[in-house]
Length: 262
Image (cartoon, rainbow, N blue to C red):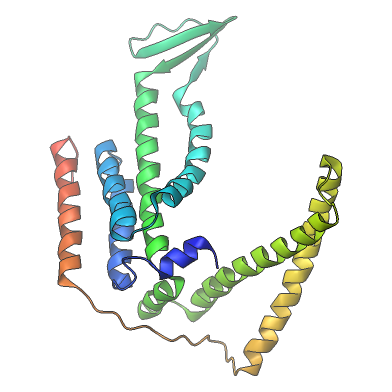
């Protein structure tokens, strides 16, 4: 079991109705994307991080590691937004920093800085909303909500099987890697590249074999074009819905107070 999946089953919000958690995370995400306001995004990030670390009791160190993954790609791509190039001299009052390399001028303007800050806050808040959902809600509970929304059974089955084969890929890849490492398969860079190619090719063969075994197992248990699930019982909480309403009211107040238009 992945650690992120383990926390989804064992956290402080595991007994909260999944509809409430999905409503909070997805509606908050939608509001962030529509508003595109840094203060709204910052407020959402603080709220969701508090729910994750304090209420759901997810370790802060693990949460920071999860945030580091998208932030690495964000900062590697934000350079192109923050820094501008020109082959001549730019006389712009918005330029807050500039330097010359040969005939080229490299500069940072107030507009690019504002766009970069806004993007950072939007990404952080959006990711925190999704992390709140996946760290506090098991996939089975999410699928239970999707079935109640009358989504096509085929779509739900595709999600289920895709999720299942994430673990199959990880299990098989770890087994093959350990087998190769015990035979000094990664002792040099050249040998490691060769072993990695073999790992990828063998991995797909192993997963294809596991797929056939899964198909046989499902058919032997009476599979008839729809996977049956056991639905866990949850209860709605008026306190939770009131909290969600307060959060959205606070975001709207911040948005309107600082120049936003609803």
